[in-house]
Length: 123
Image (cartoon, rainbow, N blue to C red; front, side, top):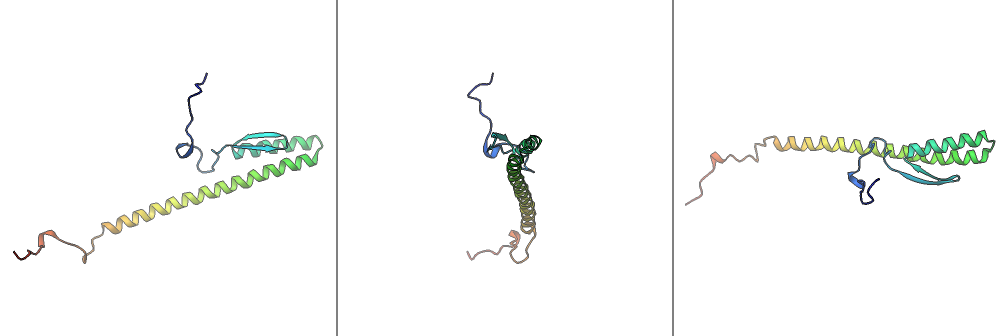
């Protein structure tokens, strides 16, 4: 039995599939009650409900389930696009960091101060 005081990591430290954002859990209140899971699971559940409704001869309910599934399809696409933009930003940030580091490492002859050729101050 699980200890009631045991907590799972949440927030920034939580690991998941960062490429697709499928680690986020949703609770959807659809026409057939609550559906819980990540976006891929919810899409599959609503599509299964739509197939079942079509087999039962109820096109209206099937369309309703299909529209719910389409909502989560759009949401999944937006998550994937966000994650790809985030990855591109990280690559750009890494490139800029490397460039800045290389600039700092280059020796600039005008600002170079060689301590061996220091001039004595009048004493």
